[in-house]
Length: 146
Image 1 (cartoon, rainbow, N blue to C red):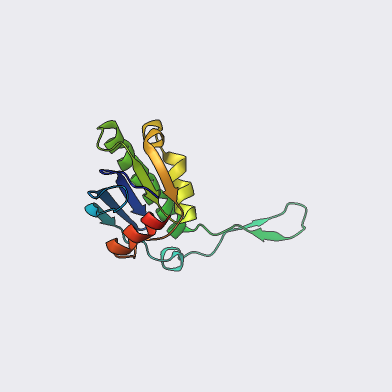
Image 2 (image 1 turned 120 degrees about the vertical axis):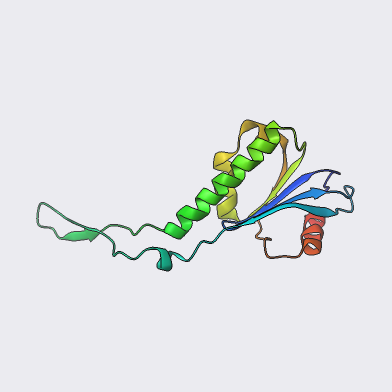
């Protein structure tokens, strides 16, 4: 993937967002960190302590359990929405012309739900990979090879 000079690159998942600026050229990216944000989000088993609710059928056919709320996933979705909001604010301030978003498929889908038209208009590429735990040099290589 060719990454134009000054492109804005966001690498995110449900717990961490990394904002980079490409200070290199299109062929040789040099990603410089502009912002890093991480949040605590314990596993769902640590967040939910109650058992799922039950309902009883009025015709005596038995009972059924409600699906337990996945607090962990809800928090990851909220974090993705917050990331999209930050992208919107920066787009409206004209902080970037070209945007590349790298995120796992589930996070990418949640981000897409919240993209503002200004963000969508500047979106150059999306890559469905989880790279938040990778060193910057490796992210640069993966983007250049994509």
